[in-house]
Length: 184
Image 1 (tube, rainbow, N blue to C red):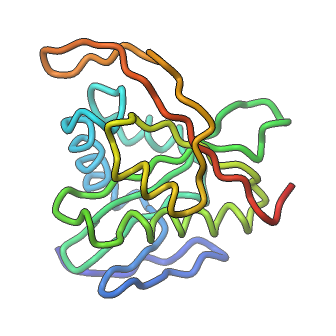
Image 2: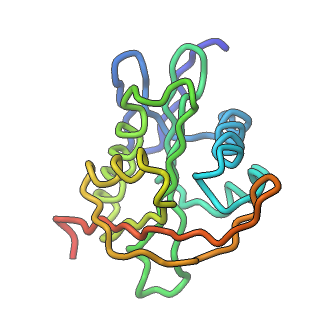
Image 3: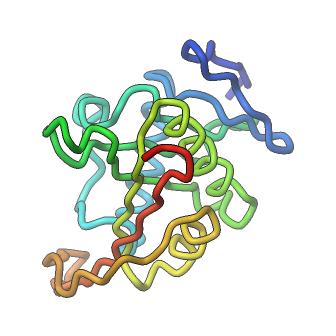
């Protein structure tokens, strides 16, 4: 893949971390973003989903202005995006975060840079709470979120029935949240 810097959305400047650029997630990143999502599905500890969604469903379910990718010369290394938690006006400042990093890029600070970018965008936009639901077995994700100010608010026991490969079992989900220190 030829490295190119997409035009950022208004008010959001690209960030560079080493040779990796954090920039807004655009339609042109769709195939790589969904492949990374599917890899997370296949790993068994990232989501209850059984397959990555279509681009249309992904795009419709994510908040505009709060979607970023990590790019290097070879392409997309990871992505972060927010989903609304409710359509009620009272919860307009609350969103759920999803962050996925390509297996070959894990351990390089990509997740931290992506999560930091989305935290910055939410602070500018006036969101006051970010939440994440993480399987307790996903220790790397738990540590990443806690390092960036998320705290465990509880464990939702047997939250959902996970259909993974030939196994079906109840899974707990750890609920983490980050309250903005400047909003609310």
